[in-house]
Length: 477
Length: 72
Image (tube, rainbow over all chains, first blue to last red):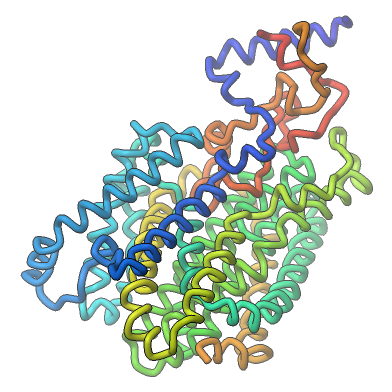
């Protein structure tokens, strides 16, 4: 053994000794163990489980709507007190249901229940308050849409008050949104996915490729490392933080590259959550068009749902906005989940080929096509399966029976549970957005990413509101 | 290498310097959990090489591999 090798071992031993958890910081290859180690799969098990239970109750002549309780619309505080008092047992039962399924699944994944449980109690109580404010009959006059309240309240708490870091265990943004998206699949007809899916894929591909290339080449022009350019580009073009991290791993980015991309994605995603709905409101855009625009131009699923749902809520309360609230969420989902998210594995595979073939990587291995499957966001499968299941169930009913029986007894409660997951998610985004702790990105990455943002937003608007407007305005039909 | 064990491949996954526990990664990369998650499928089993300060795939490799068994 050479002296250098001995030195390396000593270096590693020292690092190990300095940190008792070093051994825990390296896990074995996940492979098919992702069926119980990754939150994508757990989101599928939980959501499909809820859907099957809901359907079982429905077949037995009942409904899960008792446990899918949420605050009713109100105009004075006495109504709020009366409503909460009347349904207290239902809220407690629902809380216990969420607590059990989330705690058990997260424990298997490695998150400590002693940290998750108190944190989730806090999330749930605040979510009830957010729901209540959103249910105020004058809330829309003040733009008090639940997603925006959740986000703003969370950010205020995180940045002005501060919470202990162990509470992050309960702020599982991605887990909540994945469960919510799969439950959303149960309210989205498969026929709609088939009809609008190809348009979504076409539109998303045009914008994603354009955005990536702009960020990459502007970044290169500014002298940035090409691995950083690729990591930033994926964040702006594919699927936000998840896209950045996946591409960072595929190209062997420097450790500091990913946090820079994360900072850029978070900053612009937060801006877009407020900017896109408010600008759309000023222009009175159709909800389906805005859903597609947000799906094209937002940088993360969770942030996009906040923006799309906020605009849907506005449409339900503000006169002059055409389209239904569902159109906004459906348009967003088709564009983001179907049009963009499913391609992350292919992006990673292609970038791995480019980096190992054309770039001078010191470490790396020949990319394997299996990469496409392993990096596939599996929760999307759950979304499709949920849609197929509910479409098959619905096909046995007439439209009238669907509206009067299936909708209030089966689809409605699933939609209510989905809304809870979204509120947990939006509030968690706010609670984990700690601006002072974000990595300093520097001006060059900022301008590279921002150039992509401009292209993304403008191109997304043109394609959604002009080129493919016909599709997005007719989702309900 | 202990007898009876198959010889481990010299890839990052088995290297002393490689760290890919999701909990560790989320703490290391501030802001990851705000709009993402280290527990998602898209990460696969990527992790940080503390030797080169790079974020790599678990099946990558280099000529400075050190078996994870060396320090234990």
